[in-house]
Length: 283
Image (tube, rainbow, N blue to C red):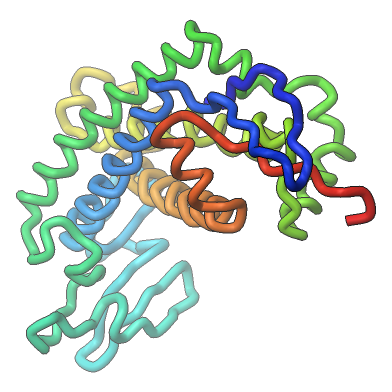
């Protein structure tokens, strides 16, 4: 990712300075991961449609109390989290398909793979791309460690842990003030923390909880059940982490759009990034 050699910061009106910001392994993994996570989310929602309830512990079935449930009544759809119930007619639980037929799956067909109900096909898609995720993530983590990416680009330096430094970065983002000049070629503290959290925490957690839900893995590695508190707890954590990744994706897209989508996307395709010019004094 960011690996620019201390460029000379451009001034407004000068020719833009280009830096080689994203190396090829990072670019390949970025786009493979984007497609993989999309397929995993949509196929996962199809699997969830087979039993749209979540529990804590080892066991869970219809008579048991579910901490989250998506369902329907004869007239409405609803989402229940704990004791809070929200009507979701037309979106979740009860919705109308493209043919005008009312359906009562938890998630609508446009959000799932396949678009028509098929638990078997949803599992096939999910398991295939789970392997893609596991293999690509392992290779990327090894490259980050031994290729210097982790030390050079994601390492949080001592000064960056300062509460004042972090708060300054939070305020800049809240005011949509993005780094300019040379500073734009490097990751700031919020980017580093979010990328480290996704790569080294959330994605491995998704893989581990997915394995915990496998009966075969329960037989070979029963300690996973103890680690996550049972298969149903693992399923709940898997679901929560999936939506944390969705939240990260939405924030990531918003930041790309606000920072300059052409420059940002082009750099993730070609590797080359144009440094935004420094602000003039008084601006």
